[in-house]
Length: 443
Image (cartoon, rainbow, N blue to C red; front, side, top):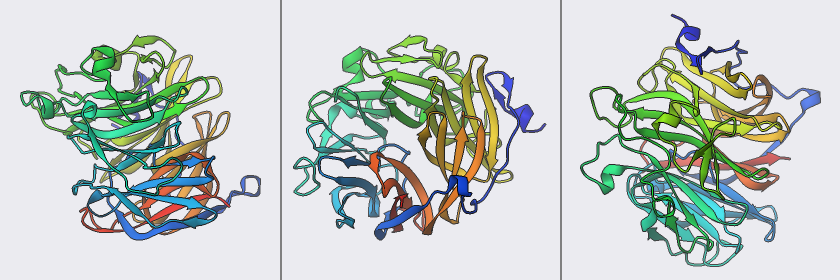
């Protein structure tokens, strides 16, 4: 049985593959792209499980770019870049020694920076900058009860200025009788720049907005790989995979299966399928197994054959059709990279590359996205162009002194501060923080 037998895209066999692995060479003359790499902080970054969401923002009023990252014990730090210089790292939140407790950052319409940390199955901690348009001053983190039992915060600012944070709830934290693999998605919203919050339970009257509690295979854990806010028309795109104990057992993150997609309307608080169908304020198992299904994969352990990774990237084309970039990994076959695009015939999937971790991407044309990738153990970031969610081509290599672990596009970026690239620590323990913090953009 080969990979075409194992992998099915919405019931349609995956398309042909264009293989590419390793770092590409210099860009061609027609696509010459030169990146400048800055080291914001040296030898201070710890291992992190951060998703490619909300690593930093550019503030046009202050002419300053702000970033956040995790240091020793996954303590949260912020930095500012202005007039070609980086401020010293400023610690604002204790991380309690858990690689999941990473900071994410948005900027409210009143100019205050809002940093959000989900304390891995515990509380949500919010810190607002003491003053608008700057990180200076004494930050005062506080626990927000509306974000109880939270992991993997994904904040964004809606067009009307409301702040949202999607997060995954570990239900057993609030209900000890719940199985360990009941972990649905919720959100909380602030209409006053992050000062006070309401949970999705309060806003919708529903226990969760995306997930399930009663699947026969116990895949009741949601791993959202990425959330991406589209301004016009306003949509919040989400891609995710399922996890859980599997048939006959309740175990956290034992199996992974399938790729899914939906978009969220932050005004109406409703979800929609790729074809625009209104699915209401809650995506239950019927929607997950129906209109939200992108790719069917076998029930496998993480890192086994065609088991989806924890991170998926999501984008859209000029005609409004969404696409998802995702990868699988295993010890024998390595990494395999896929692109799945919505078409009038349903989701169509192609294997586009091998050997790459797809870390983040950005739209650089109506139907063209730049994908940032890394190769395990190698310094540098490789960029590729993905056209129409199908055609994959090497673009250029961005050299970094050390390997990179995570990449996040900076919101409203201004070059040369386009992406935040957190260097890989030499150890899995967060007590070892010797990775660099890089910021790069067009020179």
